[in-house]
Image (cartoon, rainbow, N blue to C red):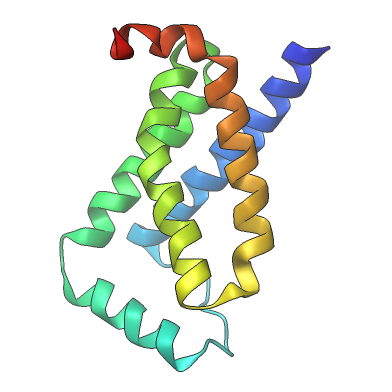
Length: 125
């Protein structure tokens, strides 16, 4: 049962990041209409750095794909972890309206990482 729950959560988590990463290349999701001014300035600054969004999008797509596959899930979680930290910090500092969903996805990522802790053990020896 635990394996099925982990797979479903990993699948949803991975698909969400694949979608977010592809959106950075294809721009098919509209921006929310009522973003605070601080968030608009931050997004404009991110867009000003021409290579940043394609880099983040690439890691989101690759990390999402790796998280879906059970054998590569630990590597995908490591790739997504710094992006997730950035998402949480942006929601804390800029606009807290997205914090609940960021908290849920952070909890899923921590669960995935905890579930694969034996694969990370050599990193700490």
